[in-house]
Every structure is written in structure tokens, then in C-alpha cells.
Image 1: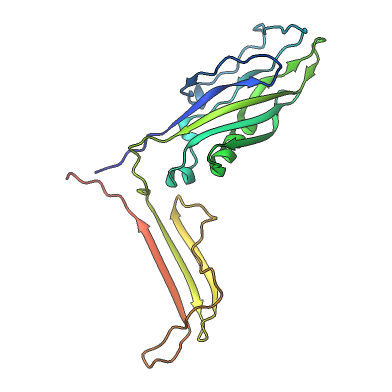
Image 2: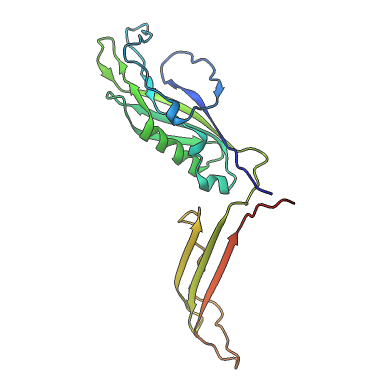
Length: 220
């Protein structure tokens, strides 16, 4: 059996933090980044009652290709709400994201994409002067129910020295495949029971622990 991963990311249209009712956002499937073309600066923007104009997004988006591998492996999904400011030059320089389940990986990914990719025609005041504007963007990171939890090819190895008195040192961690660098399997103590030789006398030893997951296609 060969597993095929299908993911989805739903981008909800962002809205400006202005003092007026905002229509309920509709869920849409985000286009690939290559499908996003900047809007023409010649297109008219709706003028507000006070003579100002809201910022208009001209580039940037989120696609299923942006799903963080760490979140896939941990089967993490959810809705992330990002609050950010569009500067007078149309770029985003700061972002703060939250999610109901406090999934830090998805929150960080959302803000990283917004800061790196999103560009705007800046908001204008009544005198047509570019001004900053606060905006909110909701992104739904969604994995299918059929996703095979845990079946991600990888291999890891942890090795460390245990001295004759049980002191642990020189822990080394290596990995192959998609494995988060921060997840290291080293002993959480500086001392363990010493390793005994055949004569029952403690001897310095190196402990090596290996783990791997392989997926092999089969006709059965």
C-alpha cells in the first residue's frame, strides 16, 4: 500500500479593522502562489465615507504546499487568526497570530507567510496620503481524516557516553528525513545506572539508540 498525502489550507479573506460591520467571510480554497497576480494599480478602490481608502492586497497567499512538515507529522490542524499592520509602503512588518488550540507551529507559519509574501496598495487618508492600517487574516489549516498518522519516512540516532560511575556525557543526535531539529532524544538526566561488563564491573560504554520508519509500496 502506498500512502498519498493530500492537505488543504483554507484562506479566509482578510478584513481591515475599521469601525463598520464586516460581512461574514466565506471559506475558499487558496490558489497556488504562482496563480496569484498583482492587481492593477489603476483599478478604482471604494472610497470610504470620510474620504479615505482601505488598503488592497495585490500579492501573496497561502497554499497547501505551505503546511509545516512538523505539523503534518504531529497531526496538527486548526484555525489561526493573524493580526498585522500594513505599513504606508504597503508591506507587512509585524504580525501576531493566535489559534484556539495554541498550535505554535501553525501560528508561526501563518505570520511568516504574511510578512514575507503579502503586499498591498496602502490605505490612504482623505488627502490621498498613504497611512498604516491594521488588518486581520484567518487561515484554516486542515488535514484530511484519512491521513495516516505517524507514517512519515524518517530515521534518527541518539548516542551518548556512560562512564563507569554512570555519568552521562557527549550526547549526539542525528536524523535523516524530515525531523524537527529541536526534537532531540537525549537523556534528561546527568547520571544513570552504570553499564556492567561480563564480570559485573562497571565499564565506560557508548549507548546508541536508533529508530526509523520506512514505507514500501506493495501489491498486497
